Image (cartoon, rainbow, N blue to C red; front, side):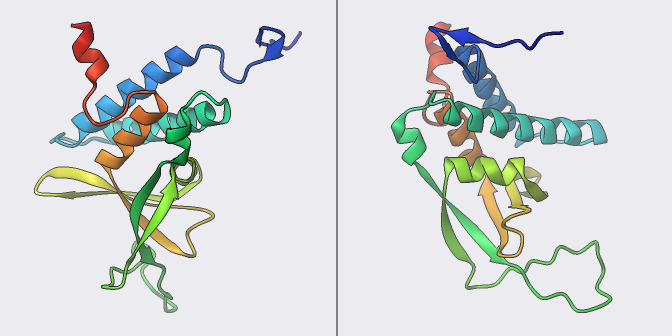
Length: 179
């Protein structure tokens, strides 16, 4: 059995059809916006949300690695709030995450690639909301977990996915033009 190699103009390609992957990112971004106001959550809907996040940010990183995003997208940074890791005393309840909300929590700038890696290598992903609306996620990766956990809003995640898809902003202008 042979190995399938995708070759375009004599050079191997990491992604076979960039436009289809970009459209997937737009659909994922739209889905995240709809999840903000979702009222009922089942095990299946949580699974679907996790799958959207993992696949969406893996796709975004692959587009970055394939040089299929703009330089502005690569240079863009996102300000996230870092809550430091606290020392856990012996015998602490393991259901409690080892992070603390403190007044001196710091804003940290992450590149889009760094945010993608947070999701791809996630250690904790905890949805965060207020008044029945999901606002974002507390997330840390296996590489960042000793530094702290980060709060990233759904709006920031949507902007990242749309930027990697070549559609800047929160509103899908391309979709409105197609109607």
